[in-house]
Length: 616
Ligand code: SF4
Image: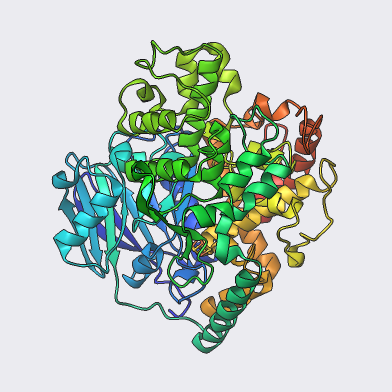
């Protein structure tokens, strides 16, 4: 076949230590594209409703799409999907580095892990040689040590490795998966699901090339967009500062979390944490996933003070928010230290920062005392508290062990009133974007198929004027701050668009920040697959994928009653940009349900299912 796919799925049964290769129907690829889309459909077909995420019947699905074969800017990405221990339903996460192209080059589109091994193992894949290798020697190692140890053992530096740390091994619900020591599949706790299967890492390398329909056209477009994106990110300084440049502007718009969403403004804190101060103080340089001219990741070097000395990957905007302003910590070196600790332990930095902020607020309210914490005073602004709690959460020990199932279950144990202060949707902690500031985030978070997530929507960037997709009607001026008109339309379009991107799989920063037009994405897709899709066809696929994820949510017990915002997002600010404002949530949800064609229970109507060619 010459469509950019192998139409092959590698299945690994860890219970019976068996591997097999299965065909993927072209029709499934045409409808669900790949990545998070096809993985969601596989999850829907194969995993029973309301399953315990740690049941061996749960799957961990690594998914690539048509964009992982050729050297496409932003194409070195892949998705990981499974039932999340944080939300108990559809969970997906994505990472970059080299892993996605490596799986593709090995001759597979998808990798499906099922069952569970009684002893620790790692998976070693080089083309058609697939081995389940013993990994007892890796137990207890952090993510960096694990990746180094596998490279050393195999004497193969070309292996791309996705690994878990102690948090994943101990099934801490917010455990992430670290790829090649510099890219992080953070959200939804799929590292803990890997841990429940006894799977410490997946190492992969390949030597093959998936054939494309029109390789000359694809090559021409790839070259054109490499140049165009590089020129744009140099000009707009995205390459120089990455996402850290967002701090000051986000704070000014009331978008950044401050004191676990209880404080409205902190311009001086945001200024110290973000670029240009960040770039200078941390000696930050751009760092890239394979093939990417943007290099939004930060490579940092800290030489003093000695306790913060490190050379590695620095925090990005989300972590500066959740481990910085969220905790009233304004030292970028301290946040870099927390970021590095979380990455080594294998923790999602967003949820880990949320947990520490929540604990600090509980301490302030005296729902937790120093007696509960072995004498540790959980004071705002103290980096030592961040470091101590990260260690405890990641290793499931001391007071921090209370968080092993997530922030919401911890709140239930601490105090019934504490449940009310958790900033979450479906149990997933809020990222560093406030739904009271860009109100299209209100329906985005409430209906987010993986919970509260800005990066399964990206609508806040449209509200802030950061990016537009005119080909699908996302244009400058389509929404105004705090006004209801078109906000739910924006939310739904962005959700479908991101569902598509995570299935292709393409990094969102190629269009948002990199200036690649959506028509260019379509042209590239058609050159690779030969399918002649229109923009509408691609957006239909995005909506179909989002809806499949919603159907998984529904069968797992989520519905209209759980499409809600946490209390904190409905309390108005006293000062700053959003003073006195809260999202008109009921009205936004009415608009949203009407646009989606969902019934009063939040279920897609028969008409919507028919339109998308889906059955329940
Ligand atoms: S923009 Fe950043 S995340 Fe996206 S591919 Fe490039 S380096 Fe990776």
